[in-house]
Image 1 (cartoon, protein in one colour):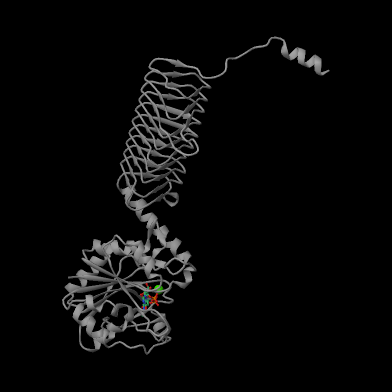
Image 2 (cartoon, rainbow, N blue to C red):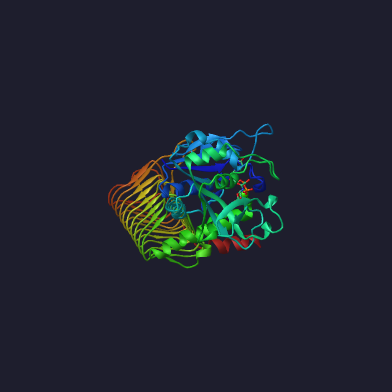
Length: 460
Ligand code: UD1
Ligand code: CA
């Protein structure tokens, strides 16, 4: 069985964080998740993750995933290094396994590259294959040392490199494919006689080569895939590359993105054809958007399902369902568990929470619809408040089809407005409004003719 060993035990000091490095997020997901996904995409059945610093937090964050965690002992009394990390998984390595080594902090690697590496490894009959890249600035990376025929001989760490070696621009990505039996054989033979006093996995290459096993190097097409994250600056750099990948995917599927550099879509979000996404849109979680939608500027949509032909401007939608043809915003807020039917208008400064609203209804301005079941063709006037909270409990309001709620009214829950019920503007409704009835619940207007003139005379 093919396995991956994903190294994630390092401290990540340069992140300056109490959160383990591999849990820092890129486009909304922990870095480690991308690496595991890429490995699975390449068809690797079993994924071991080596954890140390912050290990318990990492386990918790991945509690429902199918990776196997292995603890690397950490402390002054224990050895350290990528070689020592791989040794922790030795029991999981079968002789005939292909073993792929990955890093938890290298989130841009793709399944397709891992797949190509494994194929190359198998086709070449190698016992070890290193994924390498040419980079402008190789500082910090291990360098690939090749012989006169161009075959890889060994890898030299930056800190161990001599003047000549340090100028080599072909670097070690840290990603490898090994044959199980020979990897175990070489792991027993690596030592820590080097500048950092660490057990280096890179030494496996020279050990196998010297023993006459065939080793090789596979040069990656796109060097950005092997960028690692050691600092917040690199985190932002990788985020940008990931963001562009995601946005490109949607554009290739027929979605217009006005400015991909300022559009934030998490992996897994689905968007239908001919939808147009304006700058500042943030589409996250389990979100599905239909066809021909306009997702306007600065709109945040989280864990929601949006139908076809919906327009949303400068608004926030959380854990809600919006059916076809709705028009939302600007500055509207759908809070969790809101369900809009077809062709509904939710306008400026309207908040909806835990409510369902039927087809063709409208709340165009300045209203709060909380804990309500609103029917079809209902008009909710400007400034209407569904008074759902008595200080202890929430209560529900029912507004049936074709009702009209005049502006600046309060519906004090629990209360019902029946079909075609008509609430006069400025009413505070505490009792049921019957079908076809007009309810006026406000003081009658009194006019006092000449009152102002009299007052002014008196004041002088
Ligand atoms: C390593 C490679 C170097 C390569 C570079 C690519 C070695 C000796 N060097 O160097 O050739 O160019 O990666 O990025 O392998 N880790 C553990 N346990 C440990 C030590 C490290 O799990 O005891 C993990 C870290 O969390 C990290 C990864 O291994 O995810 C790489 O370790 P790091 O110390 O960053 O290796 P580099 O010095 O960058
Ligand atoms: Ca590193």
